[in-house]
Image (cartoon, rainbow, N blue to C red; front, side, top):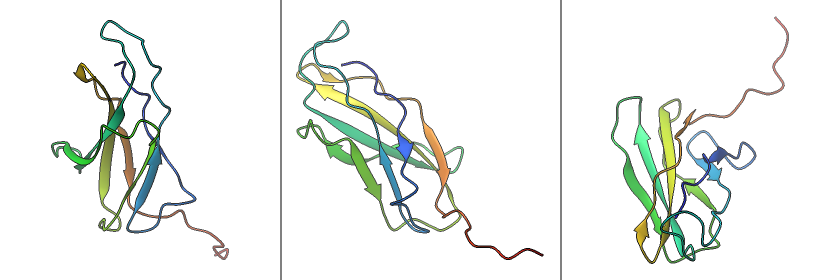
Length: 111
């Protein structure tokens, strides 16, 4: 299958210790090894030099286009990538999304 678009952090669902992300579904029957997309895999890496690790294998859930990474370390840097899957196997990983496990400040008083 084709390469998915880069995942996007959902700020409304993310917390100090979890990161919610979603991505656009990949078109069926596209690319050289096209076919019906059967699902997706989500990969996560810690820090800038950590290796990607499979954190969610949903290769049989074609409608799943979101993931919630939980039990994260507040303030730590994380990277995420997604790949699509079909009867030919796994396609290329998306570009990586980089973010920190944190929430944006709100209602700060002026100095």
